[in-house]
Length: 297
Image (cartoon, rainbow, N blue to C red; front, side, top):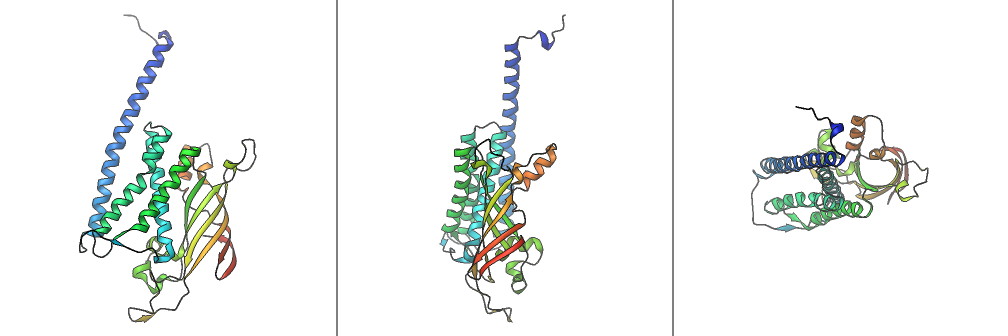
């Protein structure tokens, strides 16, 4: 029996074989994404229910108005979370073979869908309640991702996050956290939410402007030892009367997602940490005046 080599196969047959192979790979990826995504969703929701809701009293579904809490820093956090869940959903669908529009709409909406389920769980909890402000923030985060992906097929303006330790947590460690990890999540005084715009993407293709250099605009707040107002005492201990105020920042930034090296692993690592605002000089504007930070975290 003669041996047929690849060189003896007509070009169109090569093409058909490659197409069939590509379709098989994409089908396997889609199946894996559906199964893996479904398991991850079910697992995360089950874990969240047992850790957060199970041991708390339940009630009929209800809304609460928490729009004045934490000077809206929690809402900025909701928008950022929704944005990045949508980004992950978009990349997963592109990897599985979806076109840009479908990946943007379906993947980009994943953050809003996922966080809406959490709002529903909050709505049935007697100690909390669904928040219309949270839902709006979640929608804005998803919209920020989807609109850019549809218009530019890329993210020219990234939502980013930074954190620094503050002295407020020691007065309310149960609320603002004890360890660094807890404070990074709970202490809104130390968090800053950024909108980081890539300058070169708005310039002409022949521009020599560094592709990794961004300009970032940040929002933060400080002086908060309570959600709506600051308590005078906590556990019978006095709490200083801090002024609650908003902060606005402008700072250069480095877009890690646009840095390309010869190492595929390093490129993936840089992309993974692309949500972090790099500590660089920053100008702060607030009711306390203007302040310059040599390195702002």
